Length: 432
Ligand SMILES: Cc1ncc(COP(=O)(O)O)c(C=O)c1O
Image (cartoon, rainbow, N blue to C red; front, side):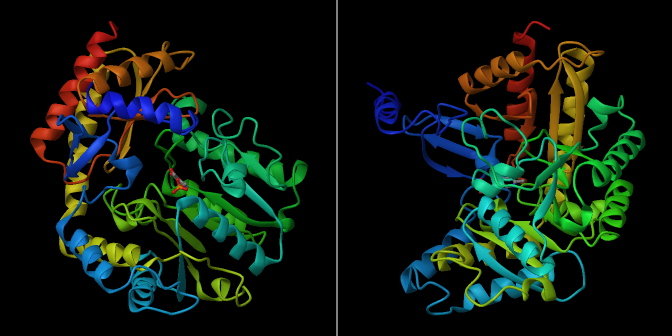
């Protein structure tokens, strides 16, 4: 029996089905954009561990930094014994995040924990309890993260009651809302928010609006700078803080270090995770100093937050962004993927929309260009085809009808082309 078959059998016995798999790959080792499974087969990685591997699998300097730290100490708990890498990384995050105002940063272990903490900080500073968020948003699987997350199945079904005082408004999803007219979608959503402040929730009770600059799990949907500017003006009138979740869009994915830079987003708190530490579990909560300092001593933190191995990995990863050409590679990879997706769109009518910001590129599959009926089953078939050809790929979207690319930014041209060729063959195999 193949090693992978044996392990899959054991997986089914030992691990709940809810802990989902998007492909049958059981990885043995990986480098760059290539994974090798336990049977010795090579896979092309277009998923990057869900956006964690922007700098690729196992960048040499990151691995070396983790090994060097492992030789010194594995854990101290920053609340018990401080260490330099945590302090240096916090300082670095304050400098590299957009905005020249005074900032402070602390660390947690996962994206969801960053969301939890961003909300805590905002509530404490404002003394308010309500939150505003968007339809199609994804903010994690903890109670607060899940409450802010939009999609019911599989993220929320059966897991209530949710955190109270979470109010949701539509995101300006121009393709689905206004026939692709972004300005119209912006106006519709801003009007909806104004109405919500009269009919749904007193804006004076809202601590923060929590949003992703580009919906990740929601299908790589973004709005323009005008929308985010108007949103900021509207919310600031009521003293509502902005918590910007750059967990998936950050660390070069969109061609700038943060998507906020391109979208002119002015925030109070910015959340980071995923590609921040190239795969070591780490998330950052960075915000205006006066907001971050409003919480009482002991109110923030945790046993593992800002683990020394993860901080070492993050410092080495940021060094790659500062001194390498990952951002240019993101732009180039995004350009190639988007051009190919647009070419696919001309040939395969099942592709309704192609959208991208840098290398955050996606295509949305529909059965009908007028009703925009989601082609969810076609996406499932396409994913199965790609898996059978050893291309690791993930879907997105509230209807599961979006294919998104989260490959390492510096994926080699031949690997990228090979992956895109598999996708095209998969589209052809759908018979549409
Ligand atoms: C935008 C966004 N926020 C939060 C999260 C939750 O992160 P984690 O899975 O590390 O808890 C994710 C994960 O995909 C995400 O994309």
